[in-house]
Image (cartoon, rainbow, N blue to C red; front, side, top):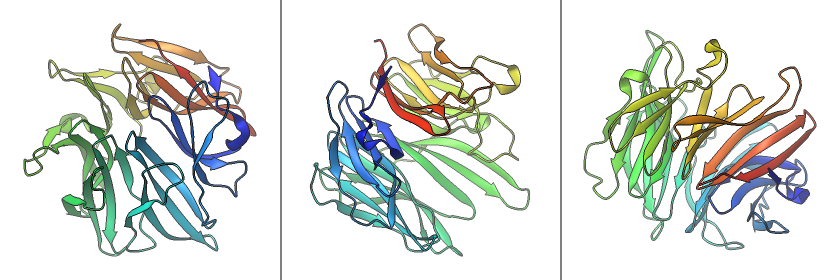
Length: 334
């Protein structure tokens, strides 16, 4: 386990593993919210983007060899004041504005990026009449985006796009406001043939939050239709070669087995956000078993949150106490 140099991690809003580097938003203190990267083994971090709009906070970041995409959310006098989606092609460059809010009360998009594509799920329209859309743009021509899907936001919503080569995966849920139910599933669009119908996965298991990889696609599943699609669930793997869908309750008390969200897939392992931060596991796809990286006193404050895995690089926040936390990383075996 290693620690990112602490000079610019006094405050971290969002972070992500990009396989060979770590990108995050934050800075020395809470008033700072700039974009940084760190290459494991280097002595220092690098400033990617200086956010001069101090009324905004960079709340999500993704990236690839083609650059970095991030959202900023603006606040004025404690009230939301809209969001913007940016693409940074190179450190220190002027970012390109890809999208922005149409109503200050609407939530910011969820985003994904690889070397070929930038994708985002977004709510446009107005707060009273929202429209949920799925957009994609080529990294070679990022200002020419395509709207792949569009639904009335009160009836259906999409979130958490994930990219693998030319595949765009995302979660989608049907809302029934009369019955107060949600029915989520996972879908995939082949971006090399964007007119084809989406492929559907996991509707019978309430699949959501897909994380695509080369041999598997991970998602969280489970629960009843009265539960929100955002609730934690069971780690589930879709094995591409066989079509097998495997639910893998994380070790621990049976009643706490359905406790994962936001999975991420690396070269060999799968990581996730665990509701029980004192237990730090990953799943080994070669050995087909869980691996425990750490376990802390259940009555204490030490815990791990928000693991992000790409390639072999795992990044996470390590809390030693409520006031002492660090951005840490490790390289998992191949």
